[in-house]
Image 1: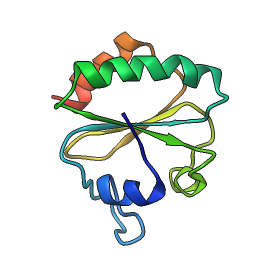
Image 2: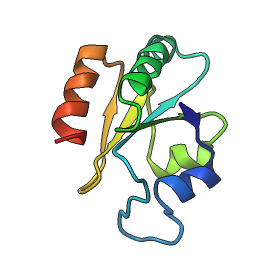
Image 3: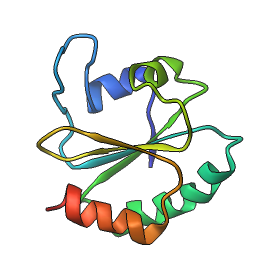
Length: 116
């Protein structure tokens, strides 16, 4: 799993400064975990996402964004609570979800929404 900065986000996911409508730049469906280091549910979610990044290696990308270090990205996506995850299919609009999700629910979202 890779930690994204504002700069890498604009090259790997979406260049929100130059595009007015959503234009995904990735080559695989993607999950972005917006987190902070002090957040309890974020700490619970992190090993699950690590496992999923191995289980779905080559099929999806999983990135992390530290909302305290990347406040511009937090503002762009109006992150108000953590963890928040952004699910990005290859086509269509991304979906934001707030709060902790157990592994079985994440697998369901990946299989039904990202890899359909």
